[in-house]
Image (cartoon, rainbow, N blue to C red; front, side, top):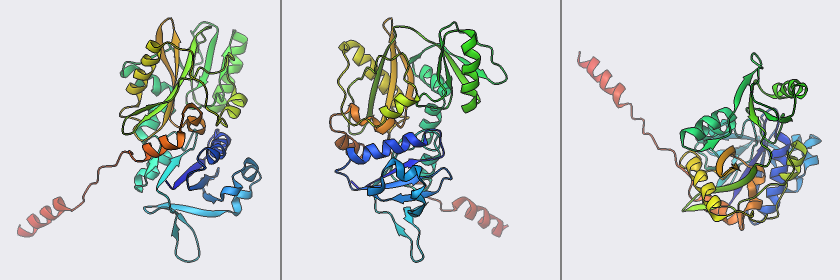
Length: 345
């Protein structure tokens, strides 16, 4: 399956997207791969496989690569003579954060009729903003932790300490703080508002269990192992940056089958039909016997490959079951009938 991995973007998570792409180059070594890099100016570049190193991008050397454009033939290599379409079967959206997870790339690919693995625009909108995610989850019967929505104009927080401060539209723990007292709160809010205009406040519950589950729906439901993340009280940006380069499969969490099935059923409610065409990871909390959705990762780091037995095979299966946009025939029948009526008049 000839696959174009699209990564980078104008996002605070730009560098994490590069790490994910470098990791998938190794994980998907059996695939014929193309690499399409989006720089901070939102220009497209075709990157040779041998140049897929973090230094190649941080040094700016990528600017010497061939530029691409996007049209109804897919990605096209610019040139002095006839433009040459990039020969791929499917595009993998690996742009974390803004551009990739907010729906911009999805909308572009849909507009030009390009087959791609990744969340569609509606799914992106609801999963990119943590506030909207909570509304969505509760509307389908999936519990979330209690929360407050704070803006720059209203910084009053009623949640008891300890609590967590989260920018509404960022992942990878960027701008997230665990707060234990009022002195820490002001600073944490200042940090969060550096990245976003909206902030979510949640209680920090000691002893809560966290589980990650990835999957998709192809010819049938495909679930990963259920992972219990590391025991650190909080995974900061640096830890998650390293986490995104994982390619070794993790072990199944020590969890009873009843809880595991409850997590899978919650995943199904979240995924189908909104996320069809994507491989997502849902992060859940379990506390006092109740399952809560923490967040939806519509484009998880390194596509959560480390949670699956045979990730390349799963990606191939998903690529064969992508949603297709309904084809609309425009025949101008209505305009012709009006013109005809006017002619008779």
